[in-house]
Length: 299
Image 1 (tube, rainbow, N blue to C red):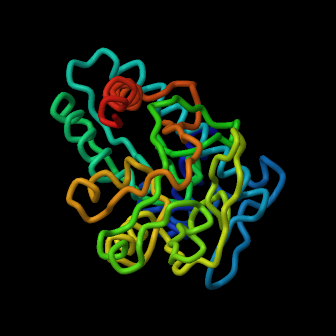
Image 2 (tube, one colour; image 1 turned 30 degrees about the vertical axis):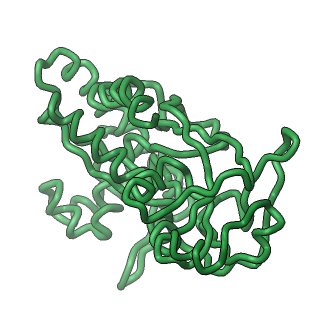
């Protein structure tokens, strides 16, 4: 029995949710799909699925086996692409890319626009999410992240550049409430917090060369960066925002930087991908492009 074909079949069954729809996708009968899955289970020695009359779902062992199959299938696809696309004058394919919502516009949109002027046959599926995704499970080629440090050593990371954090408010808010002059004065102000931060319910600041946590009763906790910027621009309070994300609103006058109050550590911007092995040529091209043009767009 062809192990690779069985892995493709298992992937189809999981993605489609049942034997009948998977059978249509792989041009087999549902009965044949069922027999092949049963043969796989006999071969590996455990059940892949829990089945009932209404639903079927992976067992814990089936989940681990399926995730391993996805990695192998992705490696084979990337290997084929790496040895064929590298010699093409017009590279093609889809790059599945994820990044925080604040990095989407204008930074990534402008980079993708410029990149596609050179490589028009490379397409993008852009997922803007403040929550890091499982790159293997979600079949993501590349994740762009802003971080003080990286936690997952199983991923491969390349540094694209860096940004800074700052405090921002609208002119309407400052006219109504006054401008704080020190960190303690912030206690008398409405402060807004990004609730999706993995660093917790506080701002990470610098004091005497060390990182300290600043926390108070937040006037409003927001789920993503765009909501945070919109609330701040609407005069609802003071927010800590990466300078890169706030830059467009500062340019239009919607936000005003507040200086001399607090300083913050400098986060880096990374391109993160699951493996060095058989990196698809299209992804390598985009990573090289990010390393070359990212820093100038961050400055």
